[in-house]
Amino acid sequence: MSDQPDYQALAEQIRVFAQDLGFQQLGISAPDIGEHEQWLQRWLDAGYQGEMEWMASHGSKRTRPPELVPGTQRVISVRMDYLPADAAMARRLASPDTAYISRYALGRDYHKLIRRRLQQLADRIQELIGPFGYRAFVDSAPVMERALASRSGLGWIGKNPMLINRRAGSYFFLGELYTDLPLPTDSPQQTEHCGKCTACLERCPTDAFVGPHVLDARRCISYLTIELKGAIPENLRAAMGNRVFGCDDCQLVCPWNRFAKPTGEPDFSPRHQLDQADLVELFSWDEATFLQRTEGSPIRRIGHERWLRNLAVGLGNATTSIPVVEALKRRRADTSELVREHVRWALEQHGAS
Image (cartoon, rainbow, N blue to C red):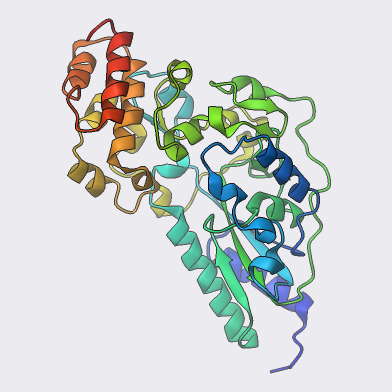
């Protein structure tokens, strides 16, 4: 084994390994996010992160990879498609009595699957060249994953501001390997291809976009249903419709997502029929049922209390019917004041108490 690998050949072999492991694309960048560091600071200074205090934690470790993992010379970014074959997003959103769950969350938790694949990728590299320095990340540490992915040529950051790929849209997960290998880098995405399109900005149900590329998370349904720990602001509840975990609207209307490809990963297929579940049915789950049905799912992280909070809002926006009103009434005496308050609001929407 040579002391100095042929890094160009190694980079090409790493791409082959990545494809074998189910990643749709791999890019390599220097550990530098350029102007994105200033963009993040302006966003934080405006307070758009809401209760996500962790976005401001760790200082410059988030924006400068070598400070987080000393010795980092390159970042290997990978993407993996997650859209189920029959996503039926528009149809579900148009059915007010059906719960809408963001399509990324219908299957098993992506963190473990992608982290395992990244570890397998590192193992294969190690088999080829011997020990090397690396650390894997999957939305689990202070990492500017979209900025790094755009710097590695995997796409551009859209106005929504998702990472968009010309051949695959934006329905994919990202993962990273910080490494000390001086691999040749890929050309960054130099231009965005959104043009004059503003469909994502106009479609947002809660008007969460301050402008192109700038999201006020405090108004975003994904933030409200997943990150926010307390009460959902009353003035935003009606606009949430039946969206009870996350939101896909700004991706749904993106023209580039006509190129999105269905996932080939069985783990990302919908479980427990969550892609077509009834709001009343989900609202009937006790905590034991919630924990059992969300085992291995990203939904579990919000806990049963916030799950009921979100569903109460969905039921408040549902078609007025005896099953809906009765389901809400059964939760009027819930042990959680957070749930009780949202139930009271929901009943008011149906003219009940």
